[in-house]
Length: 445
Image (cartoon, rainbow, N blue to C red; front, side, top):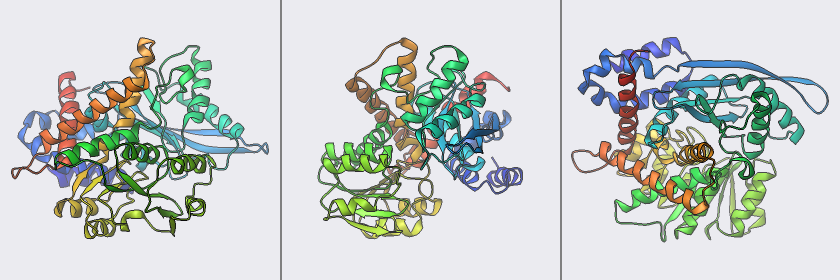
């Protein structure tokens, strides 16, 4: 495999799509040796086929705001690869949404979904619509207009979207209501649904829970647990909420959360009523964390900064892509952090990852660490297909088992000659082999 030629060709075809190109390079660097050892992958053009989406769909979404004015947003669905199952991946509603970000997320989703062992392909979608500051009626009208185009592209055995940033239970409800009316039937076509109409218990917390379960396995490789550990968490959405709750349950102490305005440091730990307050703060649609420090005087707010300067044992970046750079990595190293597990999608820059690994910090990549969300979405699909509803304990146990299996796959494929584990390499190789072999079996199509 000629990595430089492949990347040069991609850059010419997709100029300026930096997030997508970054994600592809990171995967290809990890799997280069495996590809070169398997000439049938090269003769079948697996790399050239897997790095390009099956199709990219873009559409306009006109909707009417509360003042009666027409607004127009862009909608997208990137169907990347369905070699092992229906396209599966979230919908993101955020002003930052563009084709590069959705292609990066869809590409990552291929391997993340493969790691779960569930039959799900990779896809992603969304819109540059911003639900922040919108009334419920405006959000409903936008979701209905969005689904007027999306419903033609999806189905329970074709493409199963879920929620993501800006798409929670409310948005999924409006989207599903419109899909049901257009299609004329109840199907498991969206995940993250309400519990009363096909949703799964612990789905909102699942990505955070799964990240902690994976990190717990990383700690075990060094004979350690979360008991007594201090942890930095970024973000304050569903992932951060789930991670903070589970870390506290396991005896750890989360001392940071963050938002676009900065981060809060609470040396006494974020637990109990403080987690409840975070949920209230998030529900207020303010998208800021500064009020936490007003509510709890023992905490301090650091405007415009990120939490990676705080001395901790474990770091879980759970906010957004490229939020942890080389300087942040150096701060973590200097302060004795020994474990970094990505709760978000590609939150660490390549330079940061290299520096952390070079200094012996165990680093878990997002496609493995945050697979708990899509794994639980897959469990929701199974419940819908079987017309069943599992208990919270059943879903949590299945999620825990899946995350332990993902960790073991990373270890099996990422162990170096000196006995250390490169989790990035392990995750990429394990996911790639499953998808590539399925593509080989199914021929050139």
